[in-house]
Image 1 (tube, helix red, strand yellow):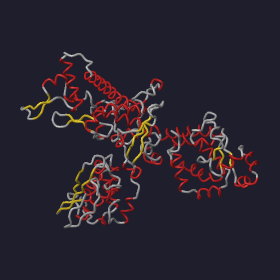
Image 2 (cartoon, rainbow, N blue to C red):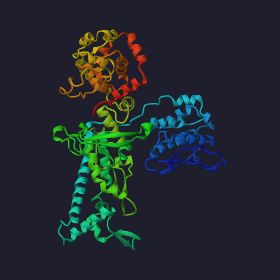
Image 3 (cartoon, rainbow, N blue to C red):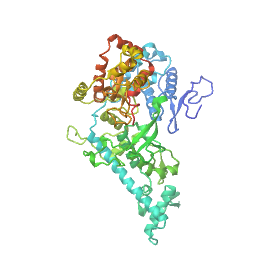
Image 4 (tube, rainbow, N blue to C red):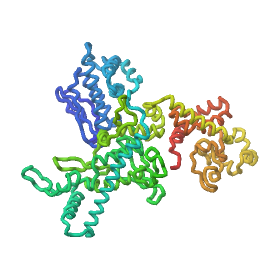
Length: 620
């Protein structure tokens, strides 16, 4: 088994201890590894205050839950699973009739755990962790299995309201201020060091010479010059170094501080909405899709979201296009090449500022920071924790727009997770997850003023449907038309405004898009005459070049019925007009024909519709 493998079978008494799970006498531990860092931690199940049988059952379940493919890849997530085991056993240990065997655990025990934590905001979330852990357990009763499948109570979100764009613009500006200062400092010091090495600076200035010695040392060793100090029993900075500031300040002349690296992570979250783990582990290796010559810079970076299992590896497209959430009230005041208002510009800047730091520790990651090592000696590190963001926000004294009941300023709660949720809510689009997950998990969690939201949806819906009513419906071939085309191709071709050669290609499926065939890819209304059409296939619904054939009916039915899987506002803004056009198109068919088409839809058709509505088929 690989070094990072974490699953093993629980050894019987007297059997040699296996990898992952260890048993020695009364000791029962599970060793887990963090997939990102390779660090390990032992979780002790022998200390739980329940019977040996329950301890072993929970240890087995925990080993399965933390195994590859079990859904947990970081020690932080494994800590939550272990805490669930501890909380469950602490509760049952207080009962008069305590369960001894796994089959003794009852649904009432889970209800009791939830009730005992009713005063905690995290109670509902804790119950989810109990269920996820016990789902891997063996020997549970059927009643308990049924309880695990029930939907739990909705999570309480405490006092957090739906974030306002103005608040998050302030978060972005605070991050930009840190990064602008870092860029000015590091670029200036790099230029000074280059000029010194090239002999372009004057000799004889002792202060300048000492400063250049410090820059040389920081550039080559990531530290200031040191010598052995008997009084300290260790190497200490040379006495004259203190004239230029604290050691950490001097090292930051050429390397990002922790605060600045965190600012980069925060701003990347604001601009992309990616998961905290994806941002903190973003690689420095990338592909420039623009070939370094395009009008809009684009970098493609490999990302990894372990919870997606076989779909965990993905490509992140970082483009040089300003995001509306991050720009000032006047969008014209921001250049499309502003390095801190686009995901591409931010990535390139961070890549530049951390280049030497990465070389020194042979790191492959984008974010590298200065950290405190042994007493008085700084180190460079690529390791981050999402918990570091809260102190960063506290240091900037970020506050919410709305004051508390007594008129006092309320600190703005900032985490990478909340930044991701805010990005998704404000943009109403999915980021590294399906649009169904967007609707059922992200947007449903923090809807805010429901009545206001419904009004926005209704207004958007009315606007888009009104547009659809003034557009025509694409020409539709019938089965009779296809039969006639075999005998009278010229007449049928003339009826549908195409030539005979095009008619044959349409019938043969050579001109299919998604929901129809295209009679003229270079003569449509969405591109200059003579140029290939680059519009979304959704716009075929009101294009004069589109023709619908009977074989397209299953796809049209599937697309029409996807409404229930999308968030209401997103659906209204993106699909209300096409939905109305599709409804008119489908109204030409009988209910029997629509039912037959729905039944005839294949798995390939469903996959195509999913990719189509997730915009995977759009030209970027």
